[in-house]
Image (tube, rainbow, N blue to C red; front, side):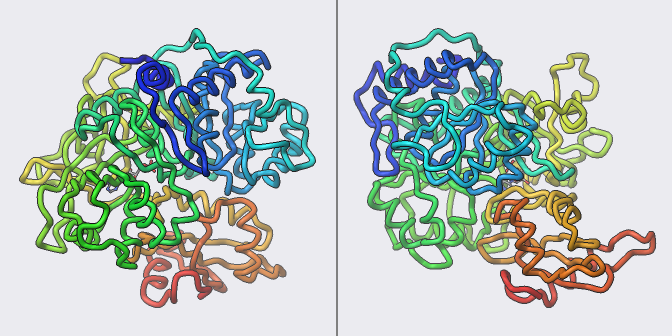
Length: 536
Ligand code: AMP
């Protein structure tokens, strides 16, 4: 078993001539993936990348992106995926908080890349490697291009890193207004991949979907689940996400054997009824993670695909991909019956605890805590947040015996399985994206047009899950129209974080303590919020 993630590719390249990754009109064999990532690692080292450096990846999902992240690992560095559709201001916060001096870029990113390179905070200190075709189209200078990479030797490298070293940083929404970087080690991913490939019986004959974007941790399982067994990874073009018929056609024509995504995608496909009875004859398993998959939508899928195994995976980024699983034995009859998040994966532990970190009684609700091999070492450069989210297990003398406080409410059912009950704080999921409503409020409060605001989420039955809603009072004398505020906000936040419903008020409702009454705001949106996307 390898100690480092990239060693799986080296092993497969020696063993089999097959295709590793397909996408963007390109197919790369394991041998090519191995050679190209070795060349890139050599170039990075020669260019001055030191062991442990954080290298940002600014490119859409593609075989080139996979070569790049492997090259980063092979240079003993950490890869930090940046959302190529994200606003430059937020990406700059990420670059700053991880102290990166390197960006590998490709694809239609010149606008955002130019803004980053010109950012006063980084001017002169960021090196850019252009991994796309031809030269970068932009006014910025690139330090090397793909042609330069190809001039380097492709033999295997010697690595300084061990399994306990960080492999990547995944930035998630932060309640204080800045994204927080979750550090993930090689060993944590390898542990999950070992368990999951065995549990699901994955093999070299598999054709696995790569649906999630690279800045989302499900993508790590897509990539290394496939590479661990020598399977083919089929990258799903992100533009298909709004075309459910095309998504279904993709599964059919690529003859996928495994699909893994957030439930919103599956619910969207169910809504447009794009899956036929006995469709996708090659498909063996369908997995989801990241949010609740509603039972009616699950029934819709299970009735159409009786030959497929359906598994719910649960877990936060901080515990590496997933910590528990539940394979649905038969199609549920009761549409109201919740699907459990199940049992801990091997090497993991789920604990339902009260506020004093004491176990609650079976059947009682408490906060779900996770222990075990998947736990992140913590948030990059933020020991305070790390200590708060990863307390030591009560009664344990070992400082390494830690828990992760998920913030999720859960209970253990009479069947011994764990059930997810929702959240008590302002973290939500919308279209599968993890969002701290407080990050949106912080960005709104920084706008000169906004006097004060309350950002809430309204749960819908639709595929989007929760819809983000904003009530605000314009600053005196400001234009403050929802269109103007939305426009200004889009320079600070990615599109998926922008509120879909807006309400302009003279003042925000307050409770008896004088605090903004968010419950009142939520109820007002829920009762007559107007259609999502509208401006109320
Ligand atoms: P992320 O870090 O983006 O994976 O988000 C983690 C959060 O997503 C968890 O703390 C849960 O609130 C939610 N979540 C993840 N998986 C599931 C699931 N299978 N069912 C319900 N909620 C989930």
